[in-house]
Amino acid sequence: MSELVEERVVTAISHDQIAAPGSGTWVLDASHCPRPVCRFAAPLFRSGFQRGFGETFARYGVLLDHMDVAVIRGFIYNQLRVLGAPPEAVNHPPKEIFDQILAGSPPHQERLATADLVWATRRWREDLERWDTLEKPARAARRDALDAVDLASLSDEELLEHLAICRDEVIEGWYVHHRYNGAALLPVGDYVVHALGWTGCSPSDLLMALAGTSPVSSGGGPELAALAAAVRTDPGAQALATAERDPAEIIDALAGWGGAVGAAFAAYERVVRFLAIEGEDSIGMPCTIEEPELMVSRLRAALAAPAVDPAQTAAQAACAAIREAVPPEHRAEFDDLLTEARLLYRMRDERAVHGDRAVGAVTRRALLEVGRRLVQRQLLDAPDHAVDLDYDEAAALLRDGVGPDPAEVARRVFWRLSADYRELPPIFGEVPGPPLPAEWLPPAAARIHVAFGFAIDAVLGDVGPTAAVEDGVVRGMPVGGGVREGIAKVLRGADDLDRIEPGDVLVTTSTGPAFNLVLPMLAGLVTDRGGLLSHAAIVAREFALPAVVGCAIATLSIPDGARVRIDGDAGTVTLL
Image (cartoon, one colour):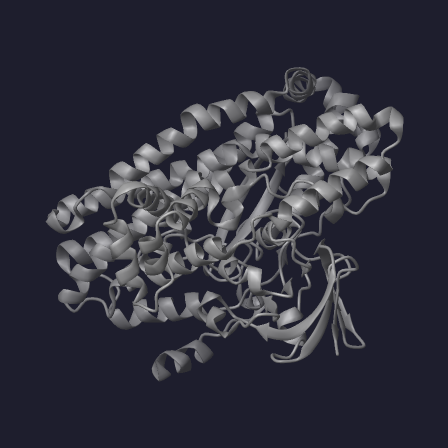
């Protein structure tokens, strides 16, 4: 490892050494990927992103064409493309010219007409039904079929053919994920925008009213709840689940348990085995099935959970308080908007879990088999290094032993696991101007424009406008109410979670599913990255936890072990 550390220093990069991926404005997405994605995954993003965003923008009457994606040194950059405009058009034209564009452009006229239909038909409900009855079951069936393949029995050529199928399914998964952006984001954004105007409540308070409606966000869902219920009714199974034994032994025993416990465990295992323990890269990062202790910890947390869900209680209180603040003449409309937002809120994370991450985990499994064979032939240092080969490199190494040597691949692995997003430029090109004024658009299109604008910013706008540190106070976006004090534990990633003790304040760059294990223990959560609809913000609401996200430099400014006060209402973390 010392040689790799030396190489890491030698290859450290400066911003002026990196070229823009193309014309126009490109923004680093450090909220979803604060570390580089693996070499195998890097080429797979663009097609799915473009198709998915393009279809959802057209289907919901948005005056955007698509989102483009570029990968630089493993880091993801995004570019929103305006309908009918070149990439350089990051600022809207004067109103007179904009009116001429709308009047003379059939594509723009079609989008305006579509906007009227979206509200008249509640198009998101049609998408939700399709997702639940067709898309999600089909993706699960495809995932399970690929996962059932006995990889060890395949020849090298058969394994490569299987890997190619998995690769194509990952691309399709990204497409499916983003095809449903409209259904996932529009009702939530529309509810928040209207309620902001009626009440003056903070966005965080308004989103708290949605807590408890997205079980998949907390990493368990109904499968974990059913397993915990079954274990509670079986004294032997409960003793096993809480025993001081090797986690792998507990998992094996539960898998072979008969009756309701065995059936519930099988259903739970089918879901969580495909969850990456950290981040968005389910090909590059280990999945839950590779970490038995995570599965056991999740089950134990569910068994110890209070009978009354604190998130449900907080959500009910938030709903009542917000509704009371709504003027009486708007309460019926408020109730309707809140109902739609709560109905669709789960789509935010379900698209990822069932759309792309699961098949990414299946692809990782195939790559690990490629890696095992290459290790046996002394062409790789470790099986999991295979995720830092692209498909052509993996094929050439497996067929002919020709390709990057083990040291080169090891350097790629070390970069992926150690690089920091701060080493890359946060933006290429001109800084975008303010959003298009909604009053320039017809009412239906304006409503979509504002709602989508809020939602996209809540997902991608991952550093708070007040992010700063001054006089011992770190500022960010408030996403979980309440004030607590505790010891700050500054973690680089999920590998450090064993350092967490009850009452700590977790400080990290961003969170992934593995972090859910420690959330019930925490006094608060602080992240460098993340917006109002980031994973950290969503799970903080699900666990009714004081949280501040998008602080930019929290991990650099808060000393590990310092005592801090986190104010989830004001969006501050104070060193005590």
